[in-house]
Image (cartoon, rainbow, N blue to C red; front, side):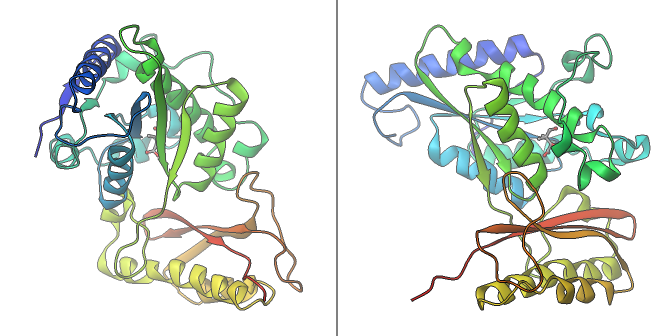
Length: 319
Ligand code: PAF
């Protein structure tokens, strides 16, 4: 296991990125990449994986994807106050930096940026923020006002801090940033932000990781007691049942999937919908098979925890 370098300020991070890229470039021209594993020819690459810590196997999959594709991997660990509209939720969000560093070292991450709040927001809450617009007001945004503006604002800052294009010693450098498919609305918004505001980074989605009972991995799962944890498994069962109806070439049985969730007394469903994966516009009608790939999207309160989950719905091949 390697020990990643821990940086606390944006200036330290930028200097460390420039140094690490320069070392990789030197190692490449000497015939290796410095880590014993040869990467394909072409420009060097940097993979950024933003997180709020409390890392689990879902994050590990993101680190592994970044490690497999890039010469340099940077992870960030920052619990962003701007995206919490409930102070109690922010207060109790798990903070586990030591364990996180172990997982990041094990995954071969090169650099970890773990700033204080005063580093990211030196003047307090920023006056100017990225607006998530109409797409940020639906679904998760409807019950968490301001949440996505807070997410986009911090992601924009993190993308700037880690941008390898700011490293004059080595160029060009390919820039990729990794986000979990589990937060489907967040992912769709980050893609739109990168396109609309002209970020250099290629935005990559990492598939949902599920535990054996089907529950999507989330930092908040630790707050589920055993009974609520058992009950929460109905969410993925309902998603898979819905997918089965689509795979069979039938109209999506959304009503059946909703009924499955509603039959579980410990689960209170907030929304369950079939949407376009990019725009999150509702799709499909109850009496016709889907005409294009879609995403089933849901959120529910399970005891003290709000859980979200989603599943791609592919159109069955004909012939
Ligand atoms: O998905 C998360 O963990 C956070 O929303 C992110 C992208 C790190 C921004 O704080």
